[in-house]
Length: 157
Image (cartoon, rainbow, N blue to C red; front, side, top):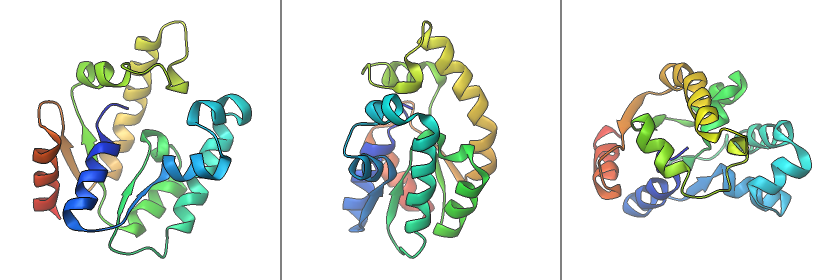
């Protein structure tokens, strides 16, 4: 949360003239509602199931940009599917910067707790080893603008 995945994915796809698939957008379209509404009505498990199904459906997609939500690495099957899809870039930033960005909007279902800052930190600590084990490359977005991050990713690719 807060690394800039959606914005960077849009710019990267435009620059490389590739189609972009955003798993969160695809899930919103499938359910016909927002991510917070999906979590509220159907629960996190249904959302995670939808993530896996979207990745399965993208197996035959080639030479495109796929943007995922930060929790997609929670399932081993998703990690295997991602690896089969291509190079995995982990967008990261300093925790405080990630928090500042993620907390700008009050629409993050996993942060709807009595102490969202603490929950954010716990989620990040839980996911960091998964990101490290999954990613082919890590790109720090802490102080870089979108164009600079896209430049870095383009060079990696």
